[in-house]
Length: 299
Image 1: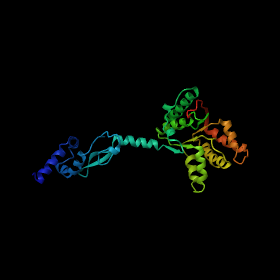
Image 2: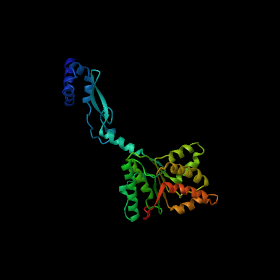
Image 3: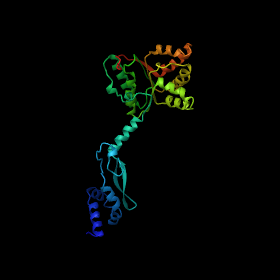
Image 4: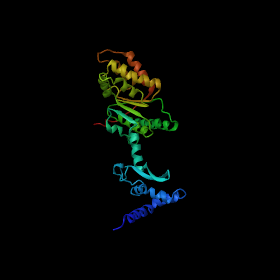
């Protein structure tokens, strides 16, 4: 049976003769001494027992290294050789995907909408070609100038033709450029705002929405409008965005005139033309009207 000294020497030789260790020693031959190597054997042994390049595991949860998603690197500090850990290529890819996903905050939007891309947009009529071109130009302007255009789109058309899908596609394009977007399904959001009065979260939720770098309001006009939701919620949000010149995207089944008529009707049966016109003025200040045609894709 080999003695302790023999076993130690075998481990030492195996460790030092490892190709990656030899490469490191050659690169630092002016600094490394035999004593330094002997003191550092535990760290060198830790190093060679792991993958020193991305192992191609497909997911970091399957990584076999001590720190999943990280690969060891040797360096010299205070006359010893030590190891540090840096993210592998797979970990960097996963972190990038998470960061991009975190660029989109959704409030009550369907998951399939949030997965949309401009490449997936069906170009089967002139209006869709126009929308695709305008969406691409919005993104291209940011890429070119580093600044977001001051106006988004007011996308209107019949029910079920894919207006929400366009919002999701633009949001994902912006997310890939690290631009934060808040996407809101308006009818459910307004119901939530009524509930928020009781738990004192109303102002925080309004601030979160109104201050978004890019805001997308989906299906405005589908809700039953009250004077409070029109003036205190939508009015507050749109006034802030108009004042700050923040791009806003809106979808609706109504054109501008139809939405203004809808906004003038209150639950109590009152017709408040002036207040509706005031909100429409704010909407028009941050959007460009774009009509979308097509067949109902939900049938």
